Amino acid sequence: MDLARKVGVKLAFGSDEWFERDNKARGQATLQVLTALATFGLAPAEALRAATIDAAEC
Image (cartoon, rainbow, N blue to C red; front, side, top):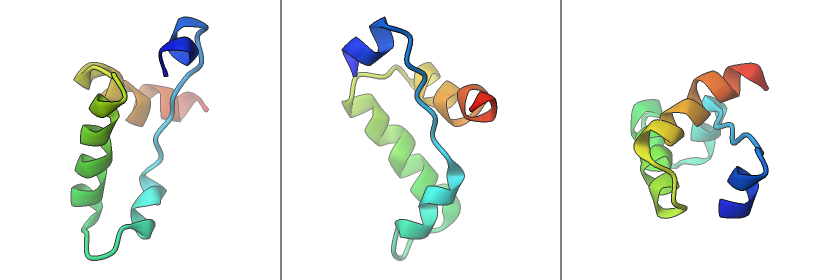
């Protein structure tokens, strides 16, 4: 993840991934993924950007 960010790779998170989450509402699944991105070293603002601005540009 660090190397990808250093070279400018955009990370995009799509809301359609929630279909793969059993027994989770869309909001719960989204929160779970955004929280998990922190374990990969993303700051909260970077995680939100991946789900909004960067996803819209991809």
